[in-house]
Length: 333
Image 1: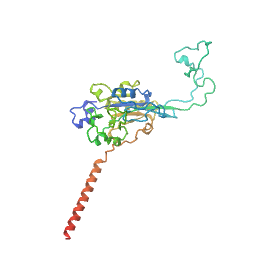
Image 2: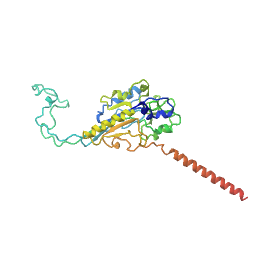
Image 3: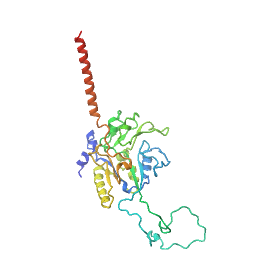
Image 4: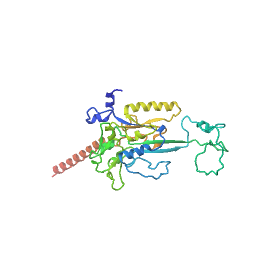
C-alpha cells in the first residue's frame, strides 16, 4: 500500500497538516487476550493516571466496569455458558498420564511419611479420574481490552468550545489539560461513553477536566509504540499504521472462522459506519453488545447542520411574521 493511500485515510490531512504521517491506531485481538491487565497498569504508569478502584465489582474479575477519566484502558471479563469454537466438551481421559504429558515423571514419587497439609493448590489428577466428575458444563471466558476509539468523525471535537480537544498529525484525538475549561460538553457527545470528567483524587491537576486515552501522543512523537501495546504479553493489542492493521485484522478473522470460530467479527474497521470508522478496531467473538459496545454507533453531531438550518428557518419565519403584523397594524391606522 502506498504512502499516498495512507495519507488519504488520515483525517489530519484535511486539517492543514503538511504531509502528515500514516494514520496510527490499535487492533485489539480479543481471541488472544488473557485478561492480565498489563495494559491497564502500563497506561496508568506512563500517563500518571490515578488509581480507579481496587475492589472487585462482582462482574468476574472486573474492578472498574468501563472506561472513564481514570480508566483509559479497561479489560472486560465476560463469562458465558458455551464452548469456544472448535472445542469439544465431555472428553474422556481414561489412561492419560497428566504428569507425562506435562513433561514430568510418568509415575508419582514415593509417598512421604509426613502429614500433608492441604494448601488448596491444584492437584495433578485430571478431573473425573477419581470418582464421578458429574456432567461438564460448557464454558468460555471472553476478555477484551477496551480503549478510546479515536473516531474519524469525532463528535467530541465538534462540541468542544475551547479547542482543548484536537486532532493530531497521527489522526488521533487528544485532550489538552491546560486548555480544557471543564464544561463537559464532550462527555454526552461521545457515542461510546469514553470521555469523563475526573472527580478525584483531591489535588490531582486534572480534577474537573475531561480525560481519556491519548494513544500516548508523547510516545508517538518519539517514534515509540503506546505503553499498553508495548506491555501486552500476547500481542492482543497491536499498534501500527491503520490501513495495515485493517488488512491484518481481516486475515485473523478469516483464520478463526476457518478454525471453527464462526462468531469472529471485526468492530470499528468500516470507514462507512456511523463514525467514519475508528482508530481503534477490535476482533470480537460475539455481538458487540456482549462487550458493552454499541452495535451501530453514530456521531452524535451528525444532525447538527440540519438542526441549525431548521432553527434559522424558524427564526426567519417568525421575524417575517412579526414584520408582516407590524406593517398591517400601521396600515390600519
